[in-house]
Length: 68
Image (cartoon, rainbow, N blue to C red):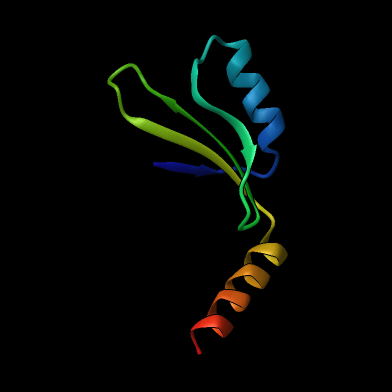
């Protein structure tokens, strides 16, 4: 499950401060997102994500052009 947040860095630091252990630290994705992954106490995989929508749509458009 992904949680879309406006300021992923702040949310990431808040969760770390509360003792959340991340299985994948905060990082940038080439499609325009920043995300980090952790698990809850039941082992469910969760992510916090922030999306740069302009970059996301530009990358998507470039991919669509390659398929045409």
